Image (cartoon, rainbow, N blue to C red):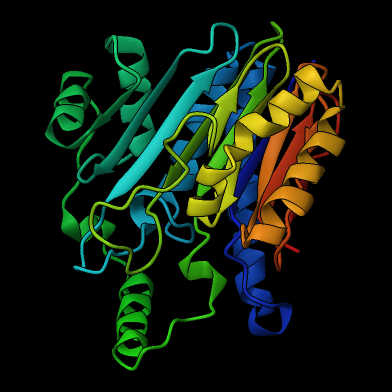
Amino acid sequence: MYALAIHGGAGVPPKDKMTAEEQAALLAALARCLEVGETILRDGGTALDAATRAVCELEDEPLFNAGRGAVFNANGEHEMDAAVMQGQDRRAGAVAGIFGPRNPVQVARAVLEQTDQVFLIGPNALDVARSAGVPFEGKDYFFTQKRWDMLQETMKLRKVGQESDDPARRHGTVGAVALDLYGNLSAATSTGGMTAKAPGRVGDTPCIGAGTFADNETCAVSATGYGEIFLQRTAAYEIAARMKYAKQDLIPAATYVVQKDLAPRGGSGGVIAVDRLGNIATPFNCNGMYRATVREGGIPSVAVY
C-alpha cells in the first residue's frame, strides 16, 4: 500500500474572493504535483523521494508560497525555510533563512544525507547546497509581482497601525507526506514564511516536531498555518504522541490537535498526515487548505475548501 498527500498552504481567501479561473489553476497545479509524487511511489520509489519531489514541484509553481512563489520579508528580501524527515530512523534535515537555491527542500535533504547535522542556517547551509549540486537562481527568478504587491500593501497598513486580515500573508507553505510500498513514512515541508515577516524570523516549517515530523510507528505530518502557535504547541509531534501514547487513530488525533489545541490559541491553519496503514488526514480550522491526496488503487482527490 502506498499513500500520498500534499498541500499548498492554508492561506486560502474566502470563496467569494476567488474566481473560478483562479481556483481551476490552483486545482490543476495541485493535481500535477500529486501525480509527480504518486508516479514515484507507484514505480517502487521511496517515501522520501516522493515527498521531496512533490515539494520541488510545488516550489517551482509560483502560485504557492515556497521557492519561486515565496513572499518577501519586511526588507523586501526572500528568506526560505524547509525540512525533510524519514520515519524509519527519524533522521531529518532542515534549513532556515536561505536564499538562492531553486528548491530549498533539496537543501534540507542534502543536510540529511550529506552531513551529521539536522538543522543548518545561512552560509553553511548554502555551502552544503553547492556541494550537493543543488541548482541556484537569481533574484529575478524568485520575483513575482503578486508577492511584491502584497508586501507593499502590508507595509502601508503597518504605517497606520493596521495589519492585513488576508490569510495568504500568514499561512503560505507547501508540503507532502508519503507512505511507500516498503512501509516507510516521510514528510517534507517548505515555505517563504509570512509576508513582511521580521528578517531572521523562522516559523514552524523547518522545526522538527512542529511543522514537520515522521515516524514509522505513528505517522508523517506536514503543517501549514500561524507558525508561532504551531511551534509553541509542537503541533506535528503532538499528533504522533496522541497516536503512540493515547492510542488514538490518525484522523481523531490530527483533528483534535488542529481544532481543539491550535484553534483556541489562535493557531489558524491545518495539517496533512498519513499513517503506516495508509490512512490520510487533512484537517484545517480556517477558510480552506490547498490539498490533494491519493492512495494506491484509488482516485486522486484535489480540493481547496
